[in-house]
Image (cartoon, rainbow, N blue to C red; front, side, top):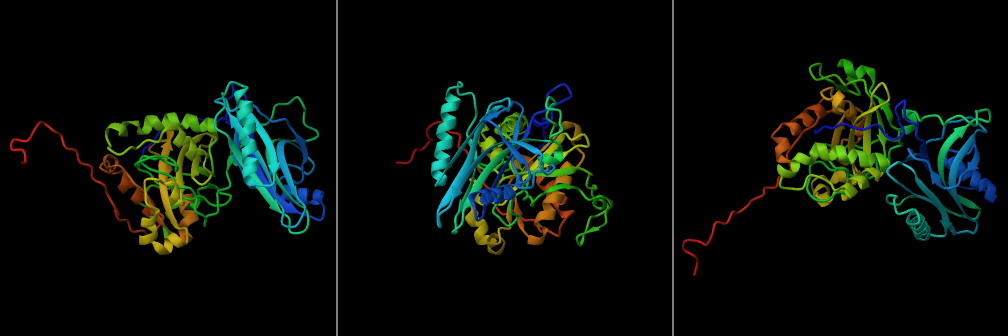
Length: 441
């Protein structure tokens, strides 16, 4: 697995820098006998029902990080929640309501929100695109691509409500109003991963073609589990029995590293990671025939894609020191054939238990400390009950360096697994020197 350094996310400022906001994007829907109780039910679904909502205009401060989450927002009953929100109501049986927030940010992490609601997903998405397009153009077009979150609710005879909330900050009534917003803690950045049985987005390794999965250089992807914010259990490092599996004493012990699962990386941080990605995997451009590197737009798309799970390793000082990606939605890996896996592994494919591994990035100060081993632990914790098929690809130049075998040996420390090479592609070239001596008549 290739390694590189990870910069500190925008929310983790140095002591001399202002702390950025960790803005959580939340969706919910609910119903009740009145529109007001339906609204409360939707807020409960979004995890913000017990706050006094202070609605903001739609400006995102610089240094902000935006994350989709599904857990309940921590805070005291009746605390103030500064937020941007969209809401929509359906009151007649069979009616559907859609609410949506859209946003775009620049290189500083600052940007704009818009809120819309309507009777269809398409109409709300179109309004978001149009509004942000106009607002961006009037500011010189400096913002990045439009992103959005939508929620829907359907009435079954009583009022229903859909909400999307961008939660900026929770404050007590007794907070100093002039005080600075508290910096987000790493536990607040731990993402809720997707349904482990779902077809989560696929990552790519050092592979061919363009990418909708996260880029890799011959690495592996794993799938995250719901609410994963896992430290590696202490007893895993001692060679003891874990879940019926024995970790051999001879293999490196699993480092005590806290690993969280991110469904997406914010736009600003993703752009920073891309520069490191180029530094790490750039040499493959002249060593491998097949294209190994994603273009920047492809890479950012992968980072923003919640189907592609990012396993992020943190130091004791709450600094990002590594990241590995994993997914199970084979349709997002354009250089492989999902039909191949469906044909050869029909039972696992039907259960959504075919996974694809992606890239690994490691901070230079932490190389050689088995961080990939640490990240594999929560991956295996998720997929072990599924008895899955896990696939990855690797350029010949990396395979000859032994990276493929190293990955296999690490996986064997967690599971009884059989490895096989399922395919390879040879490339040929003809160098023409002139006409044939005896040209065919």
